[in-house]
Length: 248
Image 1: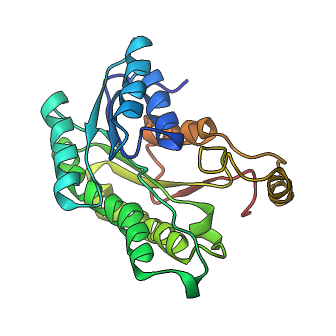
Image 2: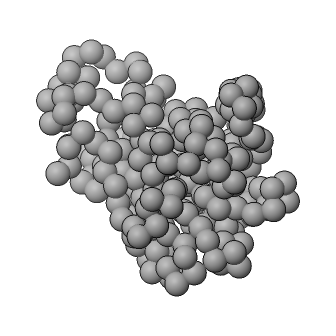
């Protein structure tokens, strides 16, 4: 297992689902983790407690990272508490699916702001510290919907495709300071958001996955931890698809 001892990691949207799994995986590999959440304090504290019970170090911090003040306060809190930030995982995200003719401008803005604007704001805040230290790992959570598009998700697909562009552009900007910027693109993953899908729909979706199964949050977390490690020090501007072969 790749170790992340003495690394300070910030994970946005870490109270549940993929973000929770990422926070737990980074902590299991030795990182100190700042668990960001927007609303569910109880769930975020549960993640912190699980990390601490396993012998790790973590803290929860509430912030709406789609707003500049929230993103800045999150990164500042991490640096104030632990002196630096080594790893940033931009995972905060929402969906508001609908066909374009029925989708409101508010639903478009909400998804783009939460998914894409938050990644830009948090990266901007974190890069200042990383450049001074001449070290950093930024991992942005995109999606297969951003790679291939998905009907009924013009807002979500646009936000996730934007994250890919953000990843590649930022990777070029900061490479000279030993900062890598990569993206992880999950396919169909078992989370609270997909748990209630009818079995018929799940089986139909399975047919599009060459490996024949849905991914788990832990599958995505393992890929994220690799990109956060020094084993991935010569990888930047890359989109790692964790999708069972869906988009190959």
